[in-house]
Length: 305
Image 1 (tube, rainbow, N blue to C red):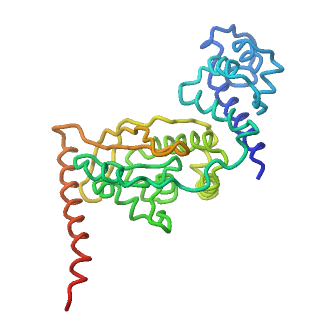
Image 2 (image 1 turned 180 degrees about the vertical axis):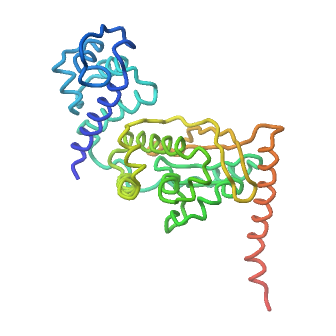
Image 3 (image 1 turned 90 degrees about the horizontal axis):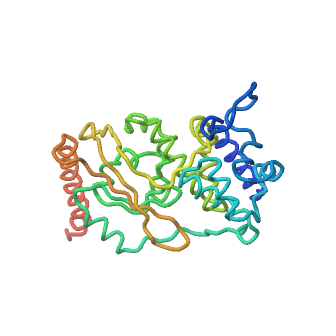
């Protein structure tokens, strides 16, 4: 697979999709006559960025290697990119440089035991760590109970690792579990898109995207939108099989495990005094009981006859 060609395609489609979202009125340009394309023309972006039309056209065709950060910043400003989109554009530029065309991640980074201790000490919130491919690499008991449909899904890999993207798009049950399924699916795709910009040579990531693209029409459509998300948080509504409807606040934080990999620590909690808090407390009790039962099983089976 030609990574450079893939990189050029990503740059071309991303810039064209952002350009299509901006109207001349939004950037103070005059509008006259019939427009053949939605949004801004290439020459209009060039004017706003202070570069020639020929130069911007070449950039939008994917020739980004060697472009200075100042010029990229001017293009980002002209296209009104948000912080996550700007980071993605700079990641694409770094990936296009010759020094970054070798695989940058050969194996998964192990999560230190101290991180698992941290997760286990969190008892009133569901807490888990995910990598950039959206694999859940560590979790506390409440997180496993909260996301039981995902952890029990056939989309879990042979090592027992759950993946949010696979569950979202390849398990029909996810559309019942996630009340706002489409919003969550779009956010999931946008997170994967950001990771693809960060780690364009990650073979496991490429295989995941290929699998989802092959098996899910919804994923293909959302992937083609080139939306990007890095920082993740908000309200999540779930229909849990044991405790019913939950409306939870969640926030993802950067977790520095290694310089070579991006991990996020995510916490789900309920607003105090709400029905969701009561249901989350019930789920916490159920999770604790289940953990005690599982911990007792090996001991009972090892007793002498």
